[in-house]
Length: 180
Image 1 (cartoon, one colour):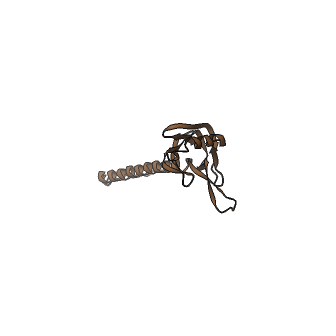
Image 2 (image 1 turned 60 degrees about the vertical axis):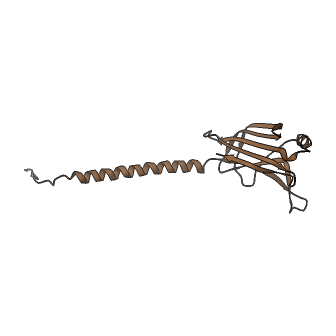
Image 3 (image 1 turned 30 degrees about the vertical axis):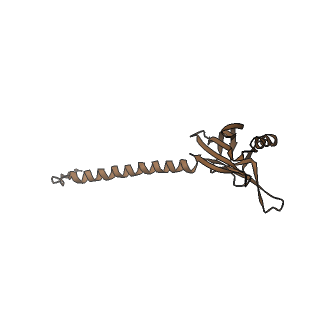
């Protein structure tokens, strides 16, 4: 059997302008896709990192309705994902002279809305702090520094809380708080 051969002699003229437009649209789509990946990654990191902070401690009084301050204790909270507390340092100073300091290392904490962990100086140490500052409690300050990371040991985050003692409320008041 004979084969049939067809020759096309009048191909349409190639338009370079349309090719350039198609290539530009493809490059623009690639750029938008890469930017979207960058934003998604950034959002994922922010939404999956741990958040750790400190708050003043209060407990319920005998009537179970009144909150009573517990200035000798500070509570810590973890939210969003588990955290490795690299260092936790609590310092109490009077007129910038260090009275008490305590540092803890390598604590592992998991987020739980009903659970916080606490730090407190011993009753004896806290009594010594109050006795030394009896005449000038307004100059009493507490600094809390926390360096922490996620369990995969990624970026190290820092939280710092500075407080002064309020004698009227018998509780610590925040001066400044910084976090990253």
